[in-house]
Length: 164
Ligand SMILES: [Zn+2]
Image 1 (cartoon, rainbow, N blue to C red):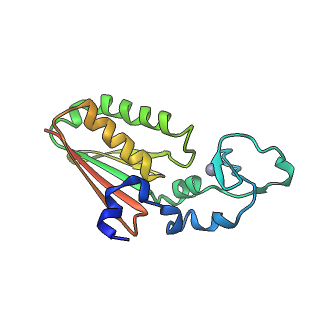
Image 2: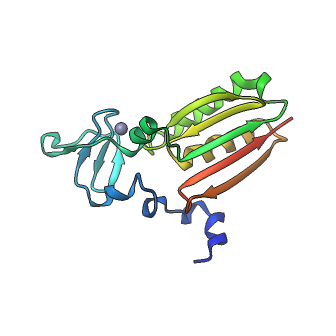
């Protein structure tokens, strides 16, 4: 498939085939993450309890592993003179994006929000959340510039949002 075309469409990106955090899970049966309580059932991640928890395996899920190892799947760098004075509203939008994303996609979580010299840096355990929160910012505060770059065989998304 054409590499450039693939990067243009979210639907065609399938990190589970390359992502070292997701790959080993293809072979797994029902599993329960003792750290966050997420379950893996019939090939899907869900917050639903396992029907037979006694028969399930226990294993740290990819999101908890990324948090423990500090290896994000996405980052959003925010810069420009608008960012620092509006950091409270920006953080609110970032957290709200996680609240909307996480119930449906349990591996999409916020890792950190930190100050940088000229703005803020947000890291996430999943690419969708990074994209979702960047688009939410872009929508909420019109007039910024948004750039999205996929890296490491489409397993990492690096987003820059600049607004003065
Ligand atoms: Zn977990």
